[in-house]
Length: 94
Image (cartoon, rainbow, N blue to C red; front, side, top):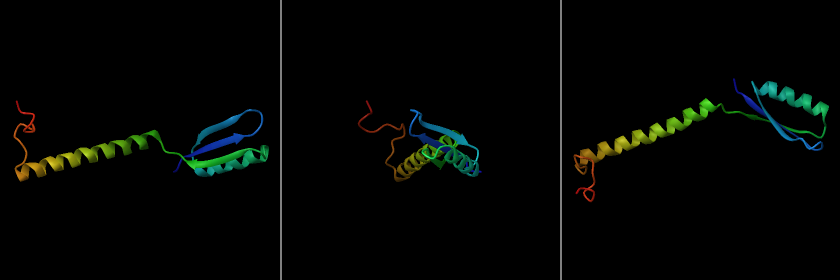
């Protein structure tokens, strides 16, 4: 099920804009119609909403991809014999 975000902007009354997360796109569209019937001047928009957990999963997926790629590069360097055993660059050794 796709959640949706209902954005309502009404001209007049100084309301500004209002956003509410809806359980589904269908419910958002139904609410949009109801709002338009009440106020013809209102601007409404339904957009897909992304849950915070989805954002975090994507972030950590990208992060783990970077970590995995760094490990692959370290392993390639070790196989080529260019890595130092104590993981320090030649300039860093004292």
